[in-house]
Image (cartoon, rainbow over all chains, first blue to last red; front, side, top):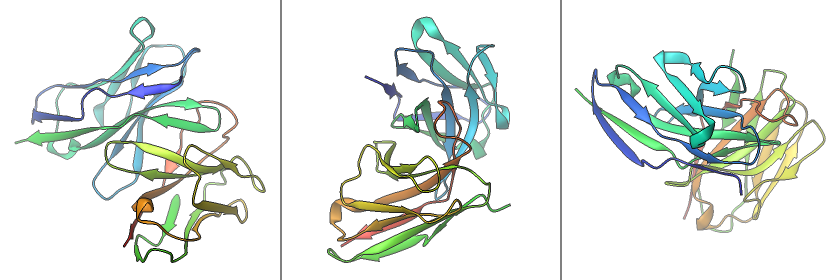
Length: 111
Length: 115
């Protein structure tokens, strides 16, 4: 079955610390993978996407993600978190005519 | 550049009432989608439209109907609202839904409460 798992429901980091949000997928073929961010009261904004090629993908706002086929993972990273990064983050993969989303990880940033 | 526009932003209904959520996109996208977002469940697809004149059911279509009015507009209708339909509803669009991997552009959502 096709699915996306985000193991961490909530994560809290200090401003300036590094961040890694985990995402695991279950899919039989090469996945098309995305990370979206949702600020409170807003819609989802695309951070980055992986289709093929280089497994390290750069996105907006200083985020990057690494695709690891052997681990079925697509973890999101940022070397130094800013207070404005507090939001909910969704991993998704692209099926035909739809995206399949994980349940999300809510990020809190302490000053 | 407005992107995807949803109206209304907030709505409170009584059980049994009907209403239509409106969505319009100005990016000339072929595909449009309606999702609902509930705590701890991510986004679940209600209906989608791969092109003008076509609609298909998603994961949770029961209790909803949709209309792809033209290429720009895709509406979602609740004929007889139920408390279980209290949720945040998102409309999205993408260039071509038939191919895998097309990123979607989202509206800001409609927060709907059914009493």
